[in-house]
Length: 355
Ligand code: AMP
Ligand code: MG
Image (cartoon, rainbow, N blue to C red; front, side, top):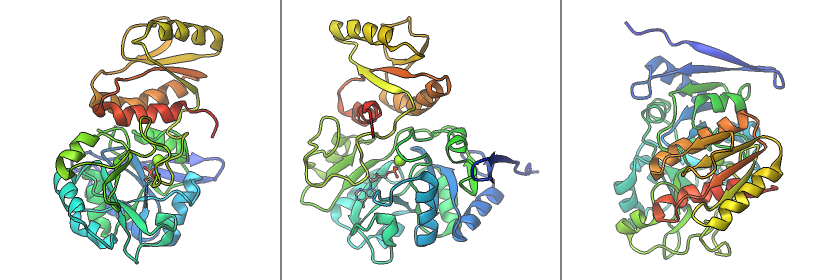
């Protein structure tokens, strides 16, 4: 017989509200929990749930009042549009006004999976979802829990990452509970998310497809399916002046509480400078290292040298250093090859000070 799902309560003293957190099997989530999540969504509530990239904060994309609650919970400006999650390509077509050949090919190659397509939006999608733009960002997630909730809810779900605005994305339910406990109706916990960084976002409106946000699906992987891409806007090695930058791709984003300092361990000068930065920093210093160059930093975390494993580990490592009270985090720059572009983008944004 199936065990009854156990709901843990997280009380938030500021909002004086409670959020339930419930653990499910990531492959075969308890149907009663899925049903409860779907009910909350259909009735205009907020549910945090795992996708393969990061945990999302979901609301019914067809209900503007529900979507408004996402912005309030995250303290996110309404100028920053949301990604709409749907179950399959047919449902994606229903939220868009055009479905070009490139969309069809990318969907066939990468969905379900961590790829978001930006296309002209269908008139039914409320303006609050798209920040008033005439386009919508849509994606078909592969995580079994996200898919079960989408199937049970029967509506498209607008879901940004389940963190406060500009802060680190959550890859575990406890990250969500810490950031948004007392601000959402339910957190569905299925353990760590497998991809670990946000989806690749591709804009398909222009003559050439443009990567608006790099992710784990690389530019060469996209080009192999749809041919040449336009200039990458907003990426660390891209052209920041390109005309169609993605709204919401702010410079500082995905940032821990600590100051972040990136360094290149492959140059001797940098290694020396790193030592000086560490010595000058005072306070508590942490590091994410690929190599063993600076073993005197106390809170150092050895990161995998495989990009997929690095992406999976990145945010949890930064959350850990924040929890340990690090004032400064030194991060060894990863290689500059297409497989690492999404990771380097997040590291660069995390390192940009101010807001
Ligand atoms: P998040 O939901 O936090 O992963 O962020 C979603 C990101 O997708 C936004 O910050 C935008 O950069 C991008 N996005 C969403 N909708 C659109 C759109 N209609 N046009 C261009 N970019 C979009
Ligand atoms: Mg986000």
